[in-house]
Length: 228
Image (tube, rainbow, N blue to C red; front, side, top):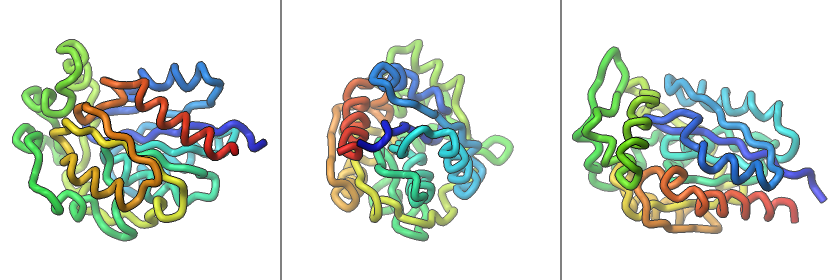
């Protein structure tokens, strides 16, 4: 039997590696090694490189998980031979060489874009936007989301994403049906295009915080399947 997989996480915009804090303990309890990477959100290439560097610490084949923009990161980093499976959570999954804007422009803009501001060249989420991002969390949790957000450089969504790892690796996709950050219909489109297993949950953009057990189950199943 292959070595037990390592779960590696890549976060998206207005978040950091702690956004998986409710899922990580469930995976650790099952005996998985878990690594949650920190992305600077300057360039797709740098974020993918940071994820790849983490693979050197992995004790087994990697299940690579990406949320939101983190989907673009795993789309390119996931071509690495150490990656055995991919899990997208309410995430972008560009075609080889496309930008995330190509995906975004397939559907109307979501309400969250009425609640952003550019400060020092980075796109920040205003406090008024947190309910659009994480509206199914408690008020205290929403305040924590705003306080810990990482903001991207303004041109991040216009950068090409090489690789399309989802064409090469077994892929699962979690759709958030109440998402007001990435259009649910876009998520369903991407899931139909790239995923063998699709799970839909009635959640905001952050099901790993609002419904962590459902997210854990999808990741666990992806890991178990590569051990067979």
